[in-house]
Amino acid sequence: MDANKLMHLLYQTTRAISQGVNQCLAEYGLYSSEWSIIMTLKEIGPTSQIALANYLNIEPAAISKSVVKLEEKQLVERKSGNDKREKNVFLTDKALSRYALWESVIQKHRQAILKDLPEEKQHELYAMLQSIYSNSQTYKG
Image: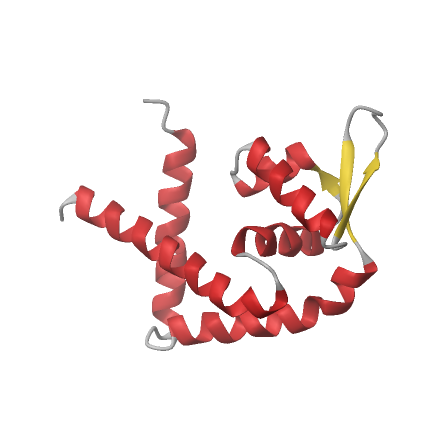
């Protein structure tokens, strides 16, 4: 297998998924990048922007930009943590009250794109992607 073709397809697939999420969430005024932050905060709870950037493997500047947009939409708040220089990001009550609706929209999208992939194959794909991800994190070139 040509590694370039494989990696290109992987990249194109992730881009197509993001675009699909953007389309699904457009009527709610959200983007896939914002959904990733909201979903992560719901999953792990309030956290610093730096920890959020590390968890999502996104540049801190991009996280900051998205957090500002989410603050403007009143979906997150930033509050000082133990270290006054570091602010933790929290979901607002507004975000928490709408979360189940957004999640159901995302779930429909996920089911649609995975519909032809039996559960066994999904587990295999998950394991393969974990391996690729792990290798990408340890490769120092």
